[in-house]
Image (tube, rainbow, N blue to C red; front, side):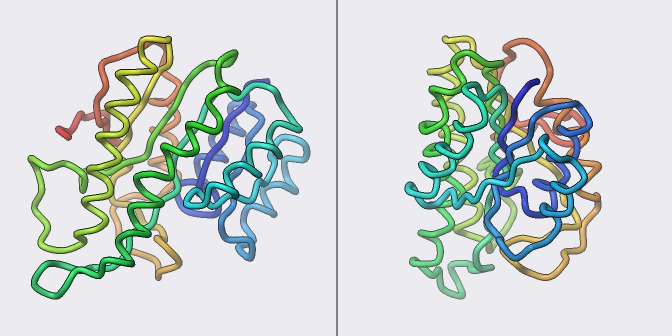
Length: 233
């Protein structure tokens, strides 16, 4: 049975990604940040032995290390790593004041978090399918930047895109398949906020994401969206 870790699996896109991988008969490790959110527990009850809930705060090295130890109790090999967890932070712009401490946390989670998770789990991926997948955003595209707010979030996604480029330059030479995905504007939650108005249901984006993530073969690194279109980043 193939194995996958999905970070930020509590709800929204992460939860829907877990559902999609279960449909494809994967053993799913669901990174849980919101312990009180019930959806993952319900999914676990319907898929006994095929979904394992793993407490995981990707902004905390100790939490990542503990999650790796939990997963290692179930498998020696991780085939697919999906970096989905992220936070949006404040709606700040330069004219209204950029809050440094809040945005440091956004960078810690959105930019450094996936890098640190990859470092901890890379030894488990050596004998697997070697697929590392990142959920990013058009918000990180410098050439297409159009917002006058969300400063920290946009900067963090641009930094993530650069990290993925460097990772691809390194691990691509070793046969790793790196995927970078823009999920579109979804009707979902970010950092405990209210339901957002969006264009897509998370399950729609998740279905297209998994199809893209599991494509065979090393390809040029692109930021591919839910419709299969490539974005400059």
